[in-house]
Image 1 (cartoon, helix red, strand yellow):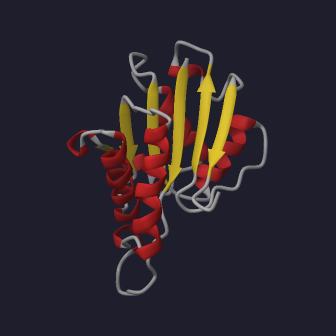
Image 2 (cartoon, one colour):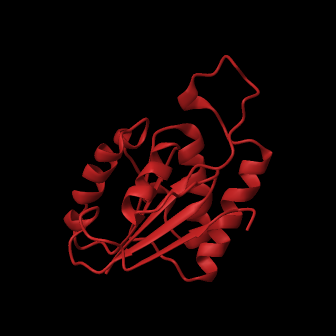
Length: 161
């Protein structure tokens, strides 16, 4: 079983218009929601084998805040440029190239890309608000099957749930 978690970055600030998009930080709500979602994952004993984040500051900060709650070493978070402003097919390419020794992988990225990917994987329309966590369990030994086989289970958690 391969389990994929798609985590949309927490709420970002729009206060400083001089910052380029990649440098936007989390706002107060985002700084609250990210560790809260991490605590929810920890309560469920979620332990990712790998965390991969977009290079955008808001996504990487979200990843670090979640990692600190689930016991994942911050230095082990992989930054992947292809998770920023990516098409669904690019996101699937990243997933399909994951090492099959990994069973639980968490990706941190953006909308609308993550909502589109979640919809493609589930066959349903999925709206991922900021800091939402979509979980997909695939009954397969290989990440290369993701997107070609239907998930055996899906779940969506949102901060306001």
